[in-house]
Length: 224
Image (cartoon, rainbow, N blue to C red; front, side):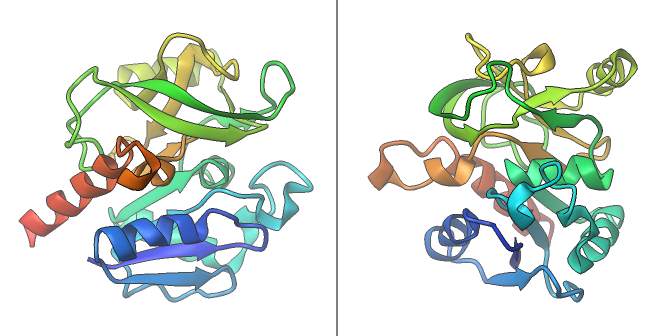
């Protein structure tokens, strides 16, 4: 199974993700520069955290027009897997692959902390390693992580069971309905503000995030 980690100018979590997929999971991993367009050799595309193009407009708004994103959209439309983490989640909403938007945190402060989450569904390849309604802890680090959508979109997300993770207990950023991560209707595109790659190495004292990558890997390998 081959992972492709997209590198935008300003990405700063790309090597963290590659460490998990390449060194912990021992899977082929390619760093995909934002100007590349050929990802035909990749099974899973990951848009990492950071500050793509400096986030000088809206977060992810410039990255959405980078050459690689046309290929990422096509990749997703074929039913292949796409994961957006933090800034990558913002890019997915800007590109239209996921609904809603990520805006300034409720208290207008950058948040860097470890946050409890509830796994809303475990019937996806991404989450099959978790129990339904399981509480896990993942790090967050963002200034624009408040999930926002109009009421119609929120109802559709709930009705279609597209909310994958919710903040448990105190909501750190004011996200509507405590949403921390969502998927598209087909479940192959996942966006989340918390960082699973930062909770994947036992040396860091927490491996709650590793199950997300392991679950996907197991699902794909059992279907090959």
